[in-house]
Length: 493
Image 1 (tube, one colour):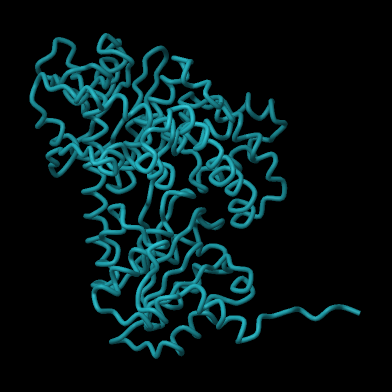
Image 2 (tube, rainbow, N blue to C red):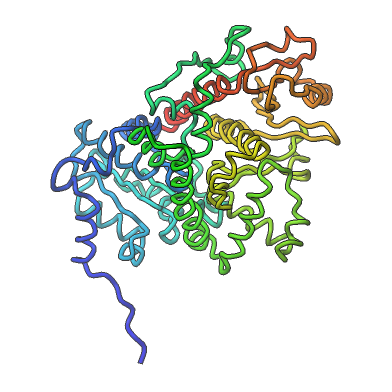
């Protein structure tokens, strides 16, 4: 005899609602949920929801452990401080076993009924791990098109399996906000070591303001090394401020264990199978190991397929899953013509180099390997520029043609820039010069970024390639990314 399908009873759901929304009883968000330290997104997202003009839902996307959930709790706190009735603010953690049994429509209908939400007094919904619920994109479309009295902010550690359907449903209905790992500028702010950078309308103008001969502060190199190895994850970085006397090796080993258990294994064995229906996550994990060994390198799909016994379509699909789970990203080879972009070699980076070290369980080995440290340094710069690209809506590339290459191309439509990352100011400029010759729109817009470099602008150099101190460059890109995020949130409201 078949067993009847179990469904949660109303009292079971009410218990979950009560547990997930303590401010309904107390009028405040527990400090353990909404920490005092806020990332830029948390300081601004609540205003976007509160204004809601034009009406848009907000989707916060990013890897595990970057603070998406915390940012939403801080958003709840801000809304309560802005005199929104706590009973109209609802939290639904959609990967909860009981909530998984219900459709999103039924859950939101219950919220609207219970809260007495109306068009003039809407319910504010915080949907944590949105893509764990079935047909989430179609339900958001329904809420929007049928004018349900709700304002929604949602998080996800993995994008939806059917991206085309998601994009079609989302046009004009929701905006995506990316929460990346901490940038170096944010980390210094967390430590109380903030360095101010005058930010212009675009990165090229910000860099142009740097005075010739300027150096980065000498003490930044120590902080940058620690930041690069521990990773840009709030909980791990906050532990540094709580335990400043811990030695570097202890911090590194602790961060790798945490990231291995959560950011890597939960993404590979939970997020990706849930979002994309992967039946063999062990193959995904093996692919991640192979990619980790090739960080900052140009991908050779045929070699990887041969090593892992994968077909080319399976490799492409699995790589896409790892990208959409915010573990890795790739940069296409710049061609200047969109039709050719995807036909040439891609360069691989990790969203955070510390995730790569955790995947390979490298322990303390990177500390004693100059080649490995150099690759992690390039990854740090690429990930920082990618954060700006996401917020500003500007595409990034690398470029390689025969023996010539340049590491990063920031393809702003009016103010493009290109950067070569070197270990010293003596690094060759040949790749940048060849790139400018092939693509004249970048003439006078190429820079060598290196530790110990001083600021020089392209027009004042014999090579036509400027130089930038590495740490100053990281601070400038971080500040520009924060401004671009603020502009993105304002345009979304």
